Length: 423
Image (tube, rainbow, N blue to C red):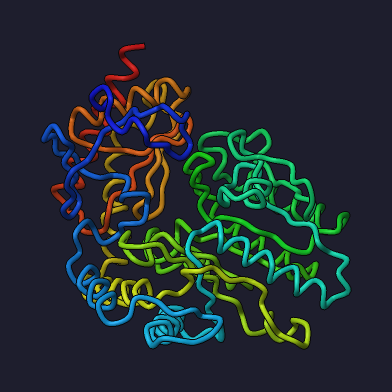
């Protein structure tokens, strides 16, 4: 998987040492497949950066983006407007079934999280400003800006902010592996949240419905509904970080739909433009906006926010997803993968858990080294997977066929067995 010596010698990379150029170099992507510069074809079980849900080279999305670039590349949203932004907001309102929300656009998930926190701060200020603390999962991940890193308890991102809100963390405690999805774990987390909200200045709860970077963890069934009820009991805002799970990844347009939970703010990004360009969004419920200070100005803005080209790509992505029934495909293909992996790996030495929802399927191993070996072996077999600590995640695009899904499952199972046997 290492590039040839000297490749990309001037390139700095995210989450790597400055001179670390390890990993494959890709030259082509079509559908669910990638080709590296040695001609090796692999199933892309990472969906780019988890953002290419419709597959590589989705023609309608690329065409819409290029056409808009030729017509009008960009306007400053603080000064004027462009039609694609209106169209996208209306399409998203339809996807979210007319919930009475307004959509604010940024570029990255990190920017959108900061925007959501700013809106929550304004809301709390209208209440007198006394409940500025935030509750998040210790193993949650909310982005890489200074504020976003301070929200996490993960070793690679947890940074105490020099200033800003105090952060309280929810943890799984004694529960590991399959136990993290148990009823006891659900009760433990809900009770801990209730205690934090009752005894602290926390007024905002920010959670991922599926913990991605924290280990590919699916929350216990019913927990999201519990969190909503506890927030209501204590007058706290519920902000859902659906940067990864939003726009179809879990087999629903948004992960909170699986439990019929309505958040106060929803942050999403990765699926919006199918990887063609950067775009993120925050859906803010009207009841939140109505409580903001009288001036009603949301203090945020970025040069490329809601660029016409990005919005046109997002509208085309949503249209393409409707035309190809991508959300149902994510649900059905994901269930097929989960069944196959669970059937073959449940009880296997070294495997702590097999879990998932839609096209986010995780195999948790008992140590990080084994997970690294699984990833390397899988690549050689023809599957490009994603590693999160001791967990190997399969997150392929929704255009994956049944035969390709079966092949991906076979590669993953073989890689796990080989990695465990080699220890």
